[in-house]
Structure formats: structure tokens, C-alpha cells
Image (tube, rainbow, N blue to C red; front, side):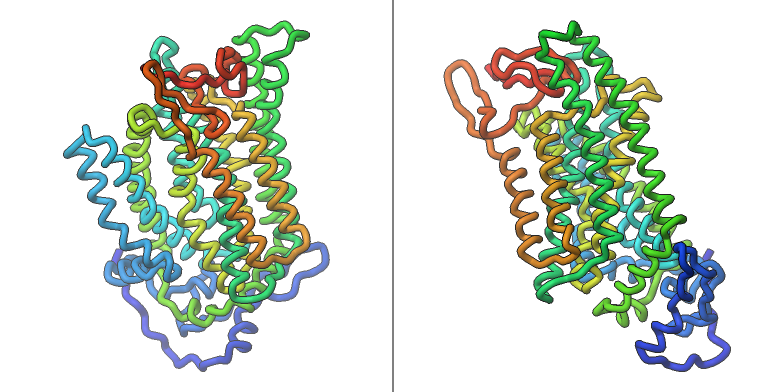
Length: 510
């Protein structure tokens, strides 16, 4: 498995930046967006012989696994920010050790595994980026985006697996509110926080950044479609739960909402497949041209080209290691959520909407911000909007369909709190409005970040009133937790009345 770097038979002449660009550029595209076959040079910019099927930009000049090179390149990571994140790696063994040595230390287990998720997710992002360099540009971006969403898929599946399905258990459907909130929280983190950071970072180094409509318009249109699909079950439930003209009891209404959610999930998956086909096959020439233009104006391209790179085998090895560790941390993290909610009185909506998306999106955010900083705004938008689209059209619907197929979490539907659903639609409209003119600046980025902070504060801020008999959260300042086990029903609460996700009740603690 250990390869040996081959010496080159002849010297490779040095080229200027313009010569390099011409040497690695693809042939012009024909009308109708159909491209000629790519003819790569025999040797790349570093003098490495290009392996068949590997893009010259991703050629490492090595084969197999070299432990020293593997560790050195992985520690260097994709950018200075990503490299700084690697100082958190000591938390990885510490989190696993504490989980088995002190299983009763729930708070420490939750905190350590939460922090440990960041460097492992960062390794997934870096290995995905290295793998993407070896592939055609559009396909590489799609693969990199999908790998960046692996952490999210793992967390969703662990939450689904750990959910209590026995109606007789008082913790029935205990993780369903967290899953629902995490789906929306992930979309909001991408479309507001990550997008805002990209626009802000890029705007600090130049007055304006121009991006192509092929990236922004398609992304905005798909997001509006996803927002519409995700909001339909909640709107259906809210409109009928208090209706006096429709004769439906709570169980019948829940079944209908579940059916609508499953049908919607299948349709959203079809939309995701159409999006992938659109980018990879029918219109890939447009995206190739846009991304190649972005590479040409990359401020650090000369440095990226000369950096040492992972081999294909090392990329796969890094992904296997990182995904395995992420699975462990996700399991341990989910085990601590109940303690945090019940004992530390942190709402499960805040955990799902804010805490979970921040850690699962860390690697994608760092990559996209670094690209925007280097004036690769189209690459940054492709990653941000692509990750958002993946969550809305693939990861979210996938949870519903997997729960359906495994006969688990029968109330795992898309019946979001109407408060969260409205926030989602407004966030998509705001982001789409900023992207409409094809230009961005730091002000637009700052406004996106501020909107996200407002949403986070509305979830985190709770004014608690203490009395001799009860401690309760005031709904006008912090939207209340749904009662575990009431998810997906229309049971009314004396305090709040019926609402999405089954009549939210304020918790009274004696």
C-alpha cells in the first residue's frame, strides 16, 4: 500500500501564470452546452505525470499511502482558518475516553463531543476538497458538497435511531422536535450565516464582487421550491387543526399530515435528482465555464497549485477515518441531548435550530468563506447554495423516507412549528433578494449575519418567572418546547392552544 514517488524522466519547462492557465484550460464549448472531450497535458504544473482519469490540478505525483505526507498535508488543511481548527484534535480522544470512563458525566460528554465534531468535520471537508480537485470541476463541486453534508446525515440518522417509538413511554418521540428543528436550522445556517460570512469576507477586500446568474438564480429558485414543499404540511395542519368545518379528529389529522409529508419528501427527492442532472449533464458546460473563470481570478491559485496533495487512496482513507469518528461523536452527542434539555433547561428547539447546525456545517462554512476571501465567489456560492439545497431536497426528505421504510418514528413528518416555517420562507426571500442583482458587498453579508443573530437570540433568550408553584418560560420571548410525545397531534394546550407539532405546551416544573 505504500507507494514510491517516481522521478520524472525529463525536466519540465517552467511556465508563466498565463501559460499555465492555457495548458490546463479545457477546449471551448459548442452551442447547446455540449463540451468536447478534455485533453489534459501529460505533466501538470508541478512536473508530475498526470494519471489517467485524474485532473491535473489534483495530481499528487504519488501513489498509495505515505504516513508522513498524509499527516503533514492533513494538518496543513485547506486554509489558515481550517489549519487553526486542527488544534481541537485532542478533544477527539478525550471525548471518547470520558464517555466510557465517566458515563454519568452527561454535561462533559455533551460538551467534549460537541467540540470534537468540529475537527473531524473539518477533515471530511478537507479530504472532500482534495478528492474534488482530482475530478471534473462540476462533478467535483457536487461530490465535495455531498461529503460536507455527511455529518448532517449521520446526525439525523442517529437521532432517528435513538428516538423512542413506544407510545407507552413518557419519552415517546423525544427526538422528533430536534430533527425537525435541525433540518430548518441547517438551512438557516447556510442561507443566512454562511452566505453572510462569504459576502462579508469577500466585501472586505474589494468594493463589490460579481457572480454569475447561473449559480445564484438556479440556487434561489430551488430554495423557493424547497421552502414551499417544506411549509405545506405545517400550513395544512395549522389550517385544519382549529377548523370547525372539517370533521377530523387528532389521529386522522396526524395521519393525513404524515401522508402529505411522505409524498412531499418523494417529490423533493425527485427535484434534487433533476438538479444534479441539470448541473452534471444537460447544462454542465455553463457551470464549467463559470468555475474556470473563477479559478482564473483566484488570488492564491499559484500557491494552491504548488501545494502538496493527497493521493486518491489517502483521500479515501481520510474520509473513512473522519466519518467513523463523526459517527461515534454523533451517538455520544445525541445521548446527552435529553440531559441538556431536561436538567439544564435548554430548549430542544434551540439545540436543533442553532447548536446542531453550527457544528455540522463548520467545515463547509470555513471552505466557502476562504473561497470568497480569495475572490472565488462563484465557488463559494456553489458550496453554500449546494449545501442548502442538499439539506432541503435530500437530507430532510431522506429522514422522513427512512423512518417510513424502517417503521420507526411514525410521527417523523414535515409538520414544522409555524414560527420556524415562516422564518425559513423569510430567510429564503431575504437571501434571494441579495443575490438578485449578481453583485455583493460587505453590507449585504453583515445584514444576513445580523438576521441570523436575531433568530438565534429569539431561541436562546428566555425570561423565566419564578413562583412558589411553577417555573415557566414566557412564549413571547422564547418559543416554548413541544411536549415530548405530543409531536404530530392536534391536542390543544390551555396555555397556548393548538399549534404545529402537536399543540405546544409551556412546561410547568414543580
